[in-house]
Amino acid sequence: MADKKARLSVDGLDETIELPVYSGTLGPDVIDVRALSGKGLFTYDPGFVSTAACDSSITYIDGDKGILLHRGYPIEQLAEQSDYLEVCYLLLNGELPSPAEKAEFVNTVMRHTMVHEQITYFFRGFRRDAHPMAIMVACVGALSAFYHDSLDINDAHHREVCAFRLIAKMPTLAAMCFKYSIGQPFMYPRNDLGYAENFLRMMFGTPCEEYQANPVLARAMDLIFLLHADHEQNASTSTVRLAGSSGANPFACIASGIAALWGPAHGGANEAVLAMLQEIGDESHIPEFIRRAKDPEDPFRLMGFGHRVYHNFDPRAKVMKAACDDVLAELGVEDEPLLKIAKQLEQIALEDDYFIQRKLYPNVDFYSGIIMKAIGIPTSMFTVIFALSRTIGWISHWNEFHSSPNRIGRPRQLYTGERQRDYPD
Ligand code: CMC
Image (cartoon, rainbow, N blue to C red; front, side, top):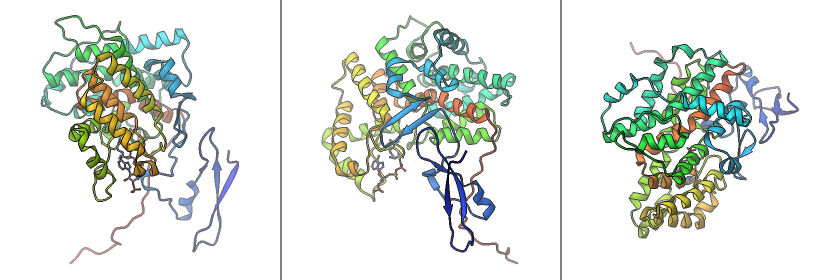
């Protein structure tokens, strides 16, 4: 229900257009502009800076205050008191599970971890040095070919089964990408292990000997999954919603989300952070890189800094920074040269006027890359791990989209091309 109205007058139009204004539970009001197309007008907002494309009750971000809530719960509390699979349940179902509900949820997820054996043959078609995100886009899209029994998007039970399959199989596929790249045999999942422990075992174990995950590293891995689980209507989530709006199957939709996540302005930033730290190479080179980041003529940006929504410290980055310290202490690598560069860079950027004025703070990707490197995960796998973690966010939004009346997403444009003209005789 609209409790307020906005009034719009446009030169050349002899009426004032009244538009309903809606208030959410939190955040800015929105002006419902849908009536404008009937008046021959569109709104114009490249980059969707001022556009709410949907209503959603999953995640709320206050970028100025540095607040991130999942279903109302602050991310810091979830990071401290919950774990990744519980947050998956929360995002998908709206409430925290009871102990019995959680046990059943975990049990169901862990019983869907295996991928069809035919999937293993897909890998052989790829070069060993293929980027794992390329393999992930292909393999997740290919899952559509395996589960015809649950592809009715209008059936809530089918949607739920797809959610379980995706949450469960992403770690298996991700670890297979890594194993393929180093020529080791794929490791089958172990369903008696925790979600993160199972992932670490599939990544670093071999069939030749027992693998026991270090609990500090398993907890850090779980935290990385948890902190990346959802982030409102970001580029990849919006891509999943848009793909879903055409009625495409969930595996195809999640594959489109993985593709959108890959870019360095989004999920690819964690890989780009490490590449940047390596390029800087030595603390003495930092001022030169800061100078380049500030030069409007130079396309170089400090990777892991800035965010479209946060104009304050990214709350996930604070938790990640603390976890980073724990992991490095546990592994005894506090003196790692790249880490020294990272810390120094962070310090200089936080004190520099350019970054202060533009409110550019380190984001989650700045620290997650450092932790993953310390755990032994190669940089090319960083964005894959982001994709694995974000799958629950994507599927929750896709499910929310299909749980109420909806229509295909179809943006319009400001046309700037040629007017109609005749083909030359
Ligand atoms: N280094 C240097 N300058 C920057 C940076 C940066 N990392 N980020 C933004 N700026 C400057 C930019 O040049 C512009 O300056 P001016 O006003 O003088 O032209 C101003 O800050 C505003 O930037 P913008 O490009 O309009 O901001 P945006 O909201 O369109 O972009 C961003 C957001 C995240 C794409 C951008 O900050 C960026 O490219 N950061 C580096 C990549 C990165 O770390 N991405 C991960 C984001 S968090 C994880 C995720 O959500 O996927």
